[in-house]
Length: 116
Image (cartoon, rainbow, N blue to C red; front, side, top):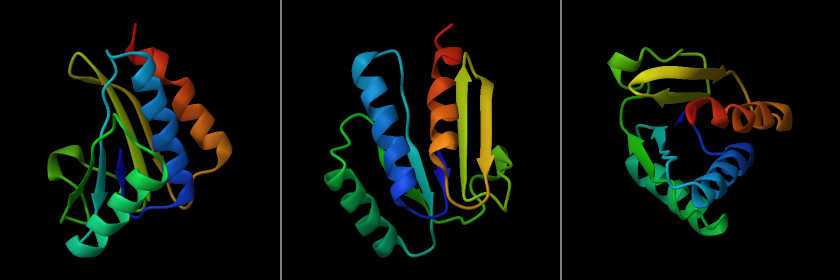
């Protein structure tokens, strides 16, 4: 997951994915906060991890607001969720604005696609 900001909907998504990883060790995930203020980003990620008891999902940051060039992330998207299987992207969701509960359910429902 690539996010431009932390939020409660993002935290909810990360928590649900963290729980799925706890149930199935074949799953792996990470969050990359795209931020130029490393101190602020580090503080926000630490708070998110502690408040939501994230155990299995590394929360990281990258000081490039556009994300890694090779990923070609949509610049308008506040969050992009990519799921890979055998080096191929199987799921790609990009959201402008806040995630909704429906968005989160859609993302979580796609997890089995990478376990096939």
